[in-house]
Image 1 (cartoon, helix red, strand yellow):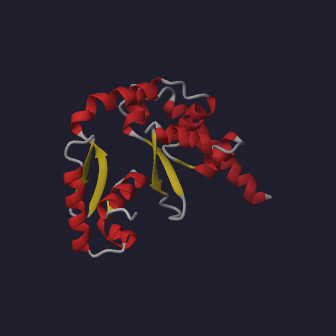
Image 2: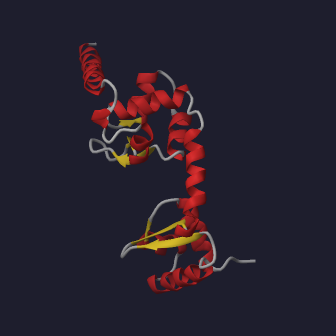
Image 3: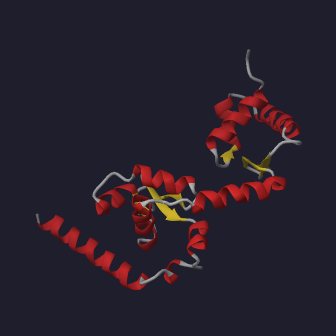
Length: 184
């Protein structure tokens, strides 16, 4: 049995877990923009009495939890954040915070181990997010989210304990490492 287009659209938006460009949805679903609009309207009607809503801008669409479910979702988020992160995740978060963003390669280099699991745990908790690396568009840079700062009880990175001292030490360490690599 073939899925209705609105069901396929729902599945794609759920799997993406972020806003998608309408142009991209047209390509993924292999439909016209008009057909996509019809499918969005059908999905919107289907979701009326459910816990999800479509959030739509001129160019993007995203599947989100319904505002009416915010109290239950908030309880879930609080319970996720209250669980112990573990040493690996805390080390990774500290690196990202004090470097004001880091690539996975940088995190792995400093920690000396593969940090994939720690990064995933932090992403799932909404404490870090992916951004484009300005130096190399092929790489992803991880940044702390507003939720991470709020969870730590600070308004900005500069309010973190010993922020100036530790960021300066980290920069000096990286400069020494670069110098030793170029002289070898």
